[in-house]
Structures are given as structure tokens and as C-alpha cells.
Image (cartoon, rainbow, N blue to C red; front, side, top):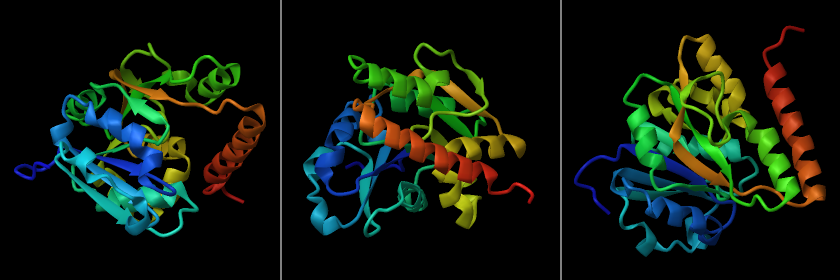
Amino acid sequence: MNDSFNPEMSVVLVTPDDYETIRKTIKHLQAQTVREKLEIVIVAPSEKTLNLNESELQEFSRFRVVEVGEINSHARARAIGIRHATAPIVALTEDHSYPDPSWAEALIRAHEKPWAAVGPVMRNANPQCAISCANLLIEYGPWLDPAPSGKASHLPGHNSSYKREILLGYGPELESMLESESIMHWDLRSRGFEIYLEQAAKTNHMNISLLSSWTVVQFLNGRVFASARSKNWSP
């Protein structure tokens, strides 16, 4: 670790069980061109059962483990991770999303401008399967590579970056906002903030490939989105 300077971006990564689940994503974070500027925030049920491999985290600015008990809500886990992050920029990623080496550098550079959020363009990490391609198109269609850089109405959920101070401004509402990030993006824009898609930041998303699993996940995602979107509707 290099504690001689403060990290420029914190990467929040949630594992529902142990380190092995996030190891592949960590490997891609190790390959970042600016890894020494990154803080890795691992949110896990328990540090004792995490089986952390600290040797794989030494080249980052710093790392920390945040214990949250059993993870029933990834939004809650991410919100806690964001509150424990120390860098001015917070990036979210997943155990099945693998950033290109220039991903972090491109996000940090984009955040030099006053964007509240900056998102990456998305690629398919398992394009051989038709279900995978359908999943990526439905969930991330507007941001598929080679989508151009520019202002956006919303950004890839679970894979975008934010100015931490703006997220913390949601206070106790942050968890509910993270349930469906598109709702939060629209809310940010309604409050006068602008958000941006950065074409130079790319990540490779591993998608569900079984029809039975995909159907269930899409149904549940739809319920979560509908619930979040209708929360402030008038009766």
C-alpha cells in the first residue's frame, strides 16, 4: 500500500460471501494504469470468513474491509461502503464486471469536470450466448460500446462513479436511491446536476446465460424498478 497520498477514487466492491467471489474483479483492478491512486473498499458479511488475500491488494493506495453481516440488500451494502470510502470519487463495480486497464484513469479524468456522475461504456464478457446478449441489451443497451461520450439522462447501474459528497447528500435515503440507480440519476438531473458517459472508460460485464435464471432476475428487477419509481407518486 501507498499511504503517502490520499486516494483519488474509492472502488466499492460487495461480496456476499468471501474473497474468492471478487478475486477476478480485483485482478482487473490490479491491472489499472492508476492503481496506486485507488482505494479498494470491500463490503462483506464478515472479515473473519472473508479469507482476504492481502498480498493482492498491496499495490493500491489503500484497502479496507467493511463488515455488514448477512447481505440481503446490495443497495444497503453499497451505501455502507460509500460512507466508509475516503476518496472524493466513488466508483461502483461488481463481482461479474471486469474493467479495462484504463477504466479508472478515464473516470478520474472525467471527474475533473463538474459531473455528478460518470459512467463507463459496457461490453459483453460472455458474448457467445444468446441469453447473455439479450440480457446486456436490455440492461445496458444505451451504453454499449462504442457509445460516444456525452451528457446522459442516466448511466449503467452498479457500474458508474460519483462525486462522494453528492451521494452523501442523500443522507438516510442513499440506500433506497441505490436500489435502482436510474431513479437517482433522474433525481440528480432534476436538481440541476449533470451526468456523463465516458467512452474511454470500458468494463466487460458477465451476463446470465440460463433462460430460467434470466427470467426470474428480469421479473425481480422490474419489481424493484417499479417500486422505486413510484415511491414519490401522489396517491
